[in-house]
Length: 305
Image 1 (cartoon, one colour):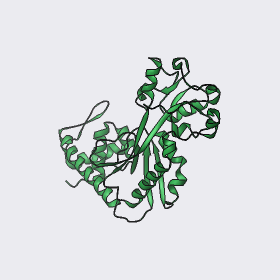
Image 2 (cartoon, one colour; image 1 turned 30 degrees about the horizontal axis):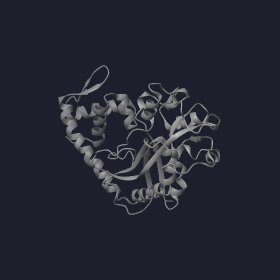
Image 3 (cartoon, rainbow, N blue to C red; image 1 turned 45 degrees about the vertical axis):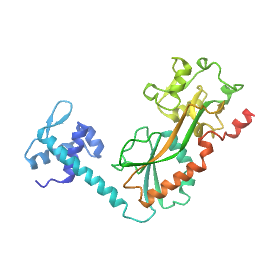
């Protein structure tokens, strides 16, 4: 058999996805194309690779055998892709950087500083809660609050982010502390995102009550507070620069998040990736006071004075 790698890749994607629609979306083609490519591969091999059930495609025994070998081929192809990327010696091209939505906003705000000496590099910022797959080049770099236990990933600690309580200035007027937390209108994450920094602290303070406004995104919480919908725990680098918010009290000592810069070990020597890594590290060093909540916005300083 001399199967085409593109057909094998379609087979592999369908085996993982289970449906034509999901596989087609992952591959960026139509689902009739997926069905046609799989049928052509089955004809070439001379064996049925999937059982067509009403709601999904399930690999047959022959499909399972082919799946193992095709997975190994994909692993080798991805490795070749990463290693050949490092053969160039110019600091130019595209660098994809993935981070959570609040950190992506922070990076976007500092793009002039990041690009100051990297004018030949095109930045792609991806804001997402979920981890990008560095092995598959879904991103070149990631900034995350946890360090995955994956042997192929190299991590560097960037620093620590502090959190505090924020409200619209009209709601925060006269408040130096929050004695009656349970009586305030709180904004927080929904039940699927209680792992976000500060949410378990807030749950304990509310003694079982839930925030009256809940979302799944830091920027949604930020804008809800900005609009006067209530009080929220926000990262200081998001809340302090906003003159439409007022911080109440200092940083919350028990709420913080370490930030890690993650890269696949095969890509860390790629000149453009290395250059962006160095620029990100320098940015975090220069903004350390802001990230740690030691710089408060002008209006906040005036109100706290």
